[in-house]
Image (cartoon, rainbow, N blue to C red; front, side, top):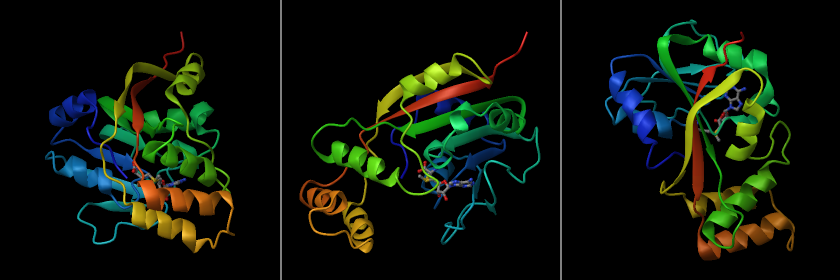
Length: 219
Ligand SMILES: C[S@@+](CC[C@H](N)C(=O)[O-])C[C@H]1O[C@@H](n2cnc3c(N)ncnc32)[C@H](O)[C@@H]1O
């Protein structure tokens, strides 16, 4: 999955740092990295699994919580739809400090996270899908912007700017139904009902939030 449109603030930084070093932590199969590449940027992706497929972008296999990367070397670091895989991360000062240490002087750090409304219809189905996946080992629920803001009132992270956007990035309903069916959900189970709803209505990303964040200076 990715994000369309990308936040204007992110695009501004991207165009300013087009020749710079850009890092996509938790890049999965590189849909976001390729979108950024299309803007003329050179992105390095990192993921714990090698999902890069045909590649097309520099890729590092590693743990985003301990990225095996040179510190103070990156002009733009992006963490997109990763926090749900790292329960407790939003509040983990050590982790944030280690991420901020990756930034070169003047570098920018962006967080992007899905926040589909829990309504009826395709975006609501995506919200239900994420609630279902949150029960898997090592995963947690989506983090709404309001909760991220609350966590950031104290601690390592200061939000410099943030916002929401409707995400028009298309989702492959067939692939999601297939993924749900692969777990062989019993008839009448939440997963089976959701699969049928998605097969009937489709699925849509709904909204996402973004934030440009900085290290909070401790006085
Ligand atoms: C939901 S995908 C996000 C993909 C992409 N960033 C996006 O915005 O669409 C989350 C990715 O994070 C990766 N991931 C989860 N925990 C990780 C970790 N500790 N280190 C590196 N990658 C991790 C998963 O393998 C998965 O590919």
